[in-house]
Length: 187
Picture 1: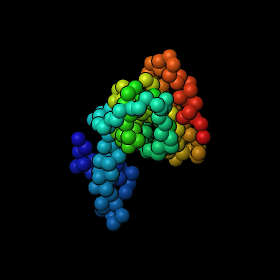
Picture 2: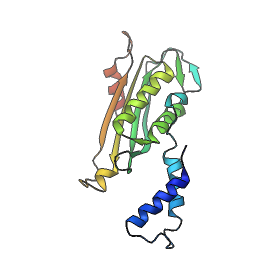
Picture 3: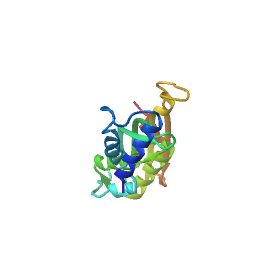
């Protein structure tokens, strides 16, 4: 549970600590705005992304893979509390059940809306899909730009980090993990 009053107090203290006048017009409501924003940005804290898969449908068995490409997201880096944002490529091989695309997006939103590392976020999403769908295999690729590298430190604009995770048994006769990864990378 987000404690907005504590956030308001903390933001006011930070503003005062950097030498700002917290009573001036532009800043007097900033602690409240930040508290409300944090409630949104960190709405995934404490949620299980596998629970996003509430509605599953019988698979006809005709599709070898389901791929959802270029799903945009943003998250907050746990090291500096600055945003990172980008796109995810998500693929899975059904084992009797499929889900609507919105469920994959919802699972991504849950893992992204918490203080996060991109590497962990990628793994958590793959794990949630594997658990939530009980599928033959999952592959996830996440590519993101990190504002902690753009705004501070090395100050390098445009660099992107790519992470990937693969889960599942990929039974013989099904698409291999390499084939699914290649589908996700294809333009």
